[in-house]
Amino acid sequence: MRSALIVLAIAAMFQSASAQRPPNIIFIMSDDHAAHAIGAYGGRLSELNPTPNLDRLADRGIRFENVFCNNSICTPSRASIITGQYPQTNGVLDLDIPLDPEKQYLPQELRRLGYSTAVIGKWHLHTEPVAFDYYKVLPGQGKYFDPDFHEKGKGPWPNNRVSSNGHSTDVITDLAIEYIDSLDKSKPFFLMHHYKAPHDMFEYAPRYEEYLAATEIPEPSSLYYQPNWGSIGTRGKDDALESYIGTSISDRHQYRNYNDMLLESKFAGPESAHRGYQKYLKAYLRCVKGVDDNLGRLFDHLKSVGLWESTVIIYTGDQGMMLGEHDLQDKRWMYDESMRMPLIIHCPQMIRGGTVSDLLINNTDFAPTMIELAGGQSPDYMQGRSFVNTLRGGEESGWRTGTYYRYWMHIIHHYVPAHFGIRSKDHKLIFYYGKHYLPESDFGKYYWATQYHGIADETPAAWEFYDLKNDPHELDNRYDDPAYREVIQELKDELRKQRAELNETDSAYPEIQAIVDRHWDD
Image (tube, rainbow, N blue to C red; front, side, top):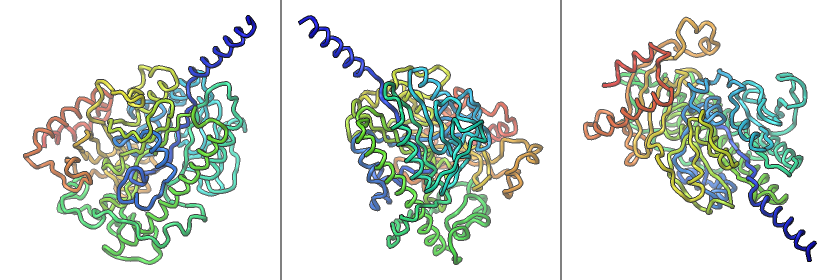
């Protein structure tokens, strides 16, 4: 009898330890996967059923509708995710600034909590992922086909390159499955599983060539018609900059447009918009389909090895993407299609399936939330906040009512003027200050200054305001409408407050601050 009681006591101890063990966490991030290219988010593309596996994940977990990045470009967004900090605090303002290895905070914190940590796929933070137990990451943007990787244990960085065969989405999924199978299962694991797709130039696996081939992709009306969108900051006085600002789908842009870049024959006006859009979206969605199919493969594997119920699955994109709205391509803009991030979380032990949340989240909140899921507490140096209470079905206290945004690079790559602003649930205020943060005397040392027309030139300063409740597609700039004077002033006050609190002022950039001061009360 005594022996039986001892056995039962030991079994109970093991059951208790198992119940208290923190979950595995797989953080899956695609590159430029816009929320409106996921079926669960609805919208014009949902009828094409591009993401059945992600849709099922949302049905069984929680989908967040108001998630935004604070700088819609790869490296800064990824830096904010891993540090829990805004760009001026973590130091990564643009694509070319490497993240200080000492600031790889998220894996550092999870290792302290007893996790095995790894990153596989796209990294794009330039320096070695030293805080991870294991890494196998693409050099820079990486290649779509037969990609090379930097792999830990294969020599000193950056000479530790190894080759692979196949399409990057397939290869990265294979590597993640192999890594999971190789793990010591006595401790929880954290895996950052990052796809290159669907980043441009949208090279999909050949097996998707017939997908959507005979389908007419639904088009946004703003591809053709938007009489009161924008400002002199985005269109110029009397539309003088219409052929200069913003890479276009149509033949509008004189240097970068999808009529020239994607089509074998050249077209003009609405026909160029239609043909360029169809070519763009089919290639983009074929890359998306490849991601979703591979996620199905990964999810099936987790179920087959008994890890599905004990693993938190987080899916996001590093930012959104302009898919023809406003005749624009790429990201960078503060318009919703660009700054909105998808966020779907599966955690069967905590989350009731089919939950939808409108909590106003940004990418600095991801790290604090994962740390709390792992049993820790968000460190004071992180500026984001955990939203675990929401995952548990509760409410967050004292949560933000507006989220700050800033794009720093000015003109480079896609001719987007530098700007900042604030978005609440119902309104958006944007200020285009139109000047690069680097002094012109430094442009001679800056590679991109030699590659793009007009990086040293200022574009007009201007405000834009959108009533998102009545104008969700941001077609009607109401900044000069007296009916909105009070709400605009409230947003300006909140914008000024957050810039100070988040260390996002222009105290280090007096020429930009002078532009802000000169136009603040316009």
